Image 1: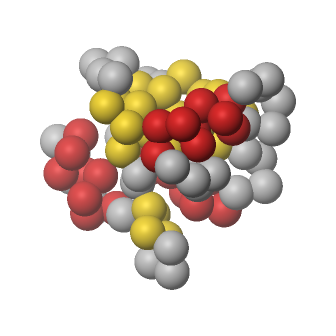
Image 2: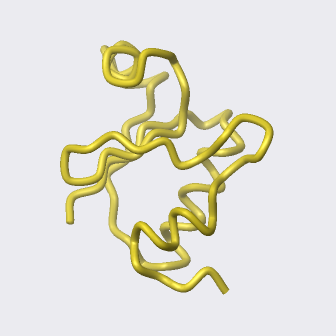
Image 3: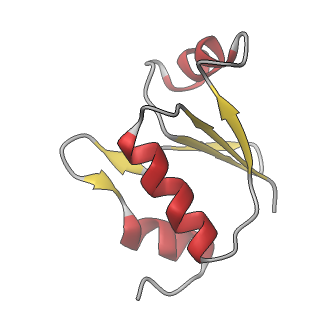
Length: 85
């Protein structure tokens, strides 16, 4: 499994996404859109908006949160095959 997380230090949902991954020992590569030239444009090109966090799992873009709902714990637990307890 190859997982990349597009995020930013100021993003609350990004911090929650990274806590979830760490809790379940899911390895990932982080790309900070504020520090990596072209990263914000990469997100825009692939999802049509500047919305983070974004997961790229084995080449497939996945939005692990919903505006107003926050990080999607249950859906991401199912996606990664881990327990959400």
